[in-house]
Amino acid sequence: MKPFDNITASSSREDIITELVKLFATYAKELLNSGGDFSYMNMFADNFKHTILKQTNLDEFEVFEILNEACDVSWKSQTE
Image (cartoon, rainbow, N blue to C red):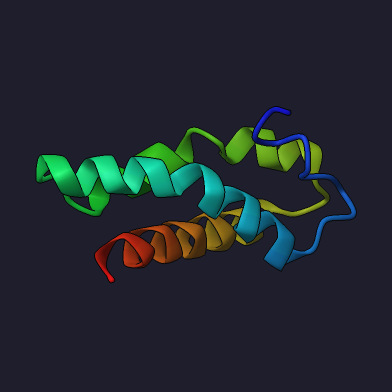
């Protein structure tokens, strides 16, 4: 199954964040291990904006908020 197969127009905000955290957690771990900072998480997440916009009924601001929250959760889960 591809990372975004579970994200559809009927997906809730929480479901989308959960799917993104699964994808982002590995990248967050690699960043932390290599000395990278959080700004790289946001750049990485931005690569998925258009896919999420196409697969959902969300507007750009909602997708922006979801991506930011997924980045935060992914990063924090690797630092705890």
